Length: 355
Image (tube, rainbow, N blue to C red; front, side, top):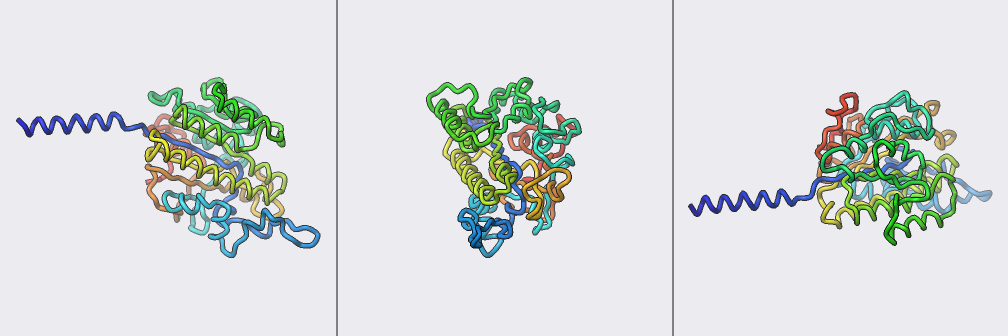
């Protein structure tokens, strides 16, 4: 009898622990138009600007080093010192690996549609503010039991609400000069004020930092299970042919990624049960003449990359001899929190092989 009673108590205790275990979560961060070249080999001195005396600008100079490994670690220290050791990175040509978009257009809205809906769509052929006809994985998850109302998105580009189709999906999106949608608390109002107080360098929205502040505040106070953050500064500086500030935006994005990861590990609701996925919507040209641009007429702009870290990711480092596509992100987002988007939407790509 004592043995049976002990066994019963053990079963009850196990059931209680299981019931109290927090559910898995996912955070996705994208770096708009960040090339694989800088991701895997760091800064290229051929792109550095020099003044009339031949002196390299000081920002670019901070990212100079003798080897590709050293240079990339200067630009993205958290990615290469932590994610590359504890997670996985896809798309390094030096390892016979490739990551690429499949939409054939190689610019933003088609790229974001592909990554979030799991397949390219010929109807999405511009960056116009048109509601996405496709159900993104964010919208699909927002309709799943246990996830409804626990999906949030942040990004300065004011096309983001159309990409996730907020009217149909009912997903709150912090965008433009209001990183926190429906701000109410003093801290939320302060974050929005910071966005407004920044120079309106781009008419559509603020710089990236307030959107990271808003995402972190949401993690700390609202505990969403699915968070998407779109970082866009790097693409803007690239279009202005400003390589120094393009590198600086990537380095700042790396700090943001580290800050988000440290926040996740500091909160009981997210610690050791949250996967972080990082990628880009498209690549760029591969030469000094065309690196600032992208699109179907720019060779190499289809090439991208992926990075992942968390409990669902086996620490395999830089993946070798493998090809993946941007369209695999959607099913991966769902898979790491135990949902099967690919089965629900058979035309979409399968999840990334993270195990």
